[in-house]
Image 1 (tube, rainbow, N blue to C red):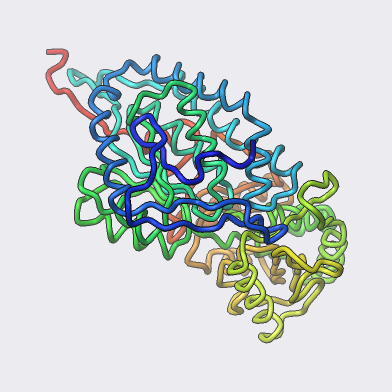
Image 2: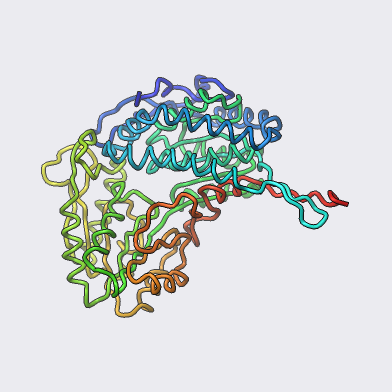
Length: 478
């Protein structure tokens, strides 16, 4: 069932409850059709308070449950997730307008694989050890506020909830109110898996209301946030007076350096696919492609060829490869930035403003590629979050590295070409993840950013460590 029966409720202390007076509702839109599929209850500060206090009350008992039993519970959660796999795919296809095959093979899969990776990492972790006469102990940090985005709903929920549970934390999850269906399903499977009351709680709401209250609440020990850099700075400021730990995975403007040694045709086409995946709505998308200047025209031709292979259509059609943007607000932003590229003199290789030909509803945009881009142009500076690729010619590798690092962001980077040359170059790029020759997604690699792309790391044991405090029991062995 893609539309949860609990759209008007929150999950607090092991039960579905109605909002307290003072909350509002918002229509949940399918961005592929612009149809409202349901009305979502938005919580108030009071709703956030009761969820936080439920998590606080549950913490002492949960955090002393042996690690093996916590892992066993997350294994049960995975089992229930797998039994509802198609429901998750349908929910994300509806709330995001995502093509159904992408929803199954990427969006729903991401939640599954991250739970699996967290379990495996937890089983292999050393939770306690001796250093001299001191016992080093990893234990849960406390009550965690988890605030997740709309662009990879299950990816980010699984990356936060699974490690927090295993670390021995209790939590309140606030999914994006724009794409809330999969988050409500996740609360349903937590209940079915037997997560104890108060350990996992969910409150939907607006960031400036529920998110702000969660970030500032004195009973919250940690905030884990994924979203925009603008919102991340507000959360950090709200958390500062109570000296919480704040883990943030924020924006990106990831460079993709195509080396002279690369097959320009194949490397560019793969780079376009990486940029356009998830309709360009990924924080680590390779949106700035750097190509040797003498191969720029070949790169433009290959990029245009790759864009022509994109199939835009109904999300229910298995042949569709690109869905809409998430909302009218995002559509308007992307239109503004495409126009900025045109106005500032970039060469429009393909695409442009407006909907694709033959499309008259849904927040679809034309896959757009610009050539002859310079690093000073708006389309090179701002995170667009849509299927818009900037191709920047370079004269030397030093030139490419300078431009690649000339950004306030540092989430990811990409290099295509000779492996030995790429390995050397990887050390010069200021990014949390550097991908060589378009590798498969590694859910055991650390994921997080340098600079204004955030702090902390997610995935597997990296994520577990973020939810742990480190205790030294001195004299243990004396």
